Picture 1 (cartoon, rainbow, N blue to C red):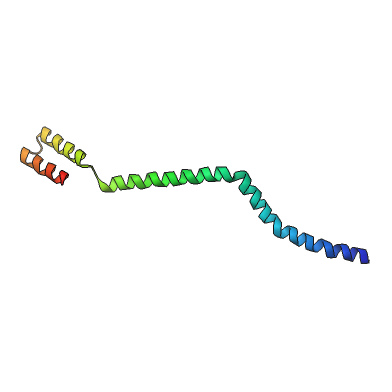
Picture 2 (spheres, helix red, strand yellow):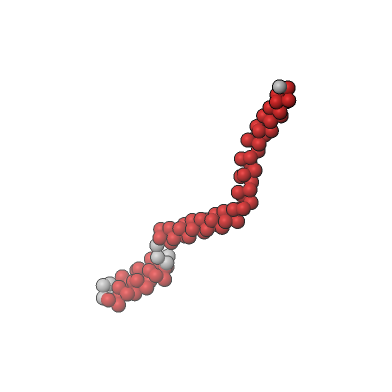
Length: 95
């Protein structure tokens, strides 16, 4: 009976140690195996966020001065506005 008590006394601490260290070991192995793909996904997500931010800024900022002048010129050519209105829009776009 004494031998089985000794083996139980040794087995329990080993079992507890295994339960504590196994999750950490498993996580470490997972990070080593999948680390590069995790990095690639993170870089892709950051690039996507950057692209969305740039699109938003362009959308909010509106048209550039040259685009505004081209639009005003098209209105002038179509006869929608006259020369004075074109000059006013051009000056506004350049200011």
